[in-house]
Image 1 (tube, rainbow, N blue to C red):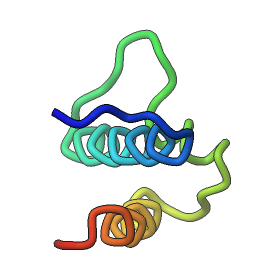
Image 2 (image 1 turned 180 degrees about the vertical axis):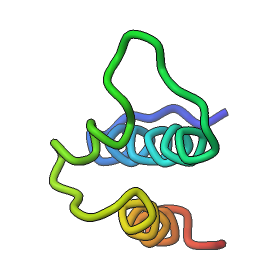
Image 3 (image 1 turned 180 degrees about the horizontal axis):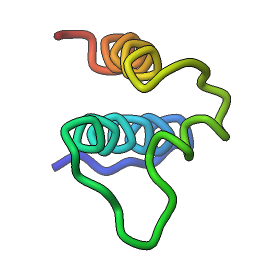
Length: 68
């Protein structure tokens, strides 16, 4: 297991987690008490529909991980 030590790595892990949460929301799962992943991503500056935000996050994922 790799330790996340830099702020860039931590932010990258957060974006990957939000991406997974958004995919689950698009399939119908909801969070009970906290804001949705979509609303959190919107406050972070992502724009568009859920599908457009997911496409942006896929591009970020490819950049961070380097593979599909």
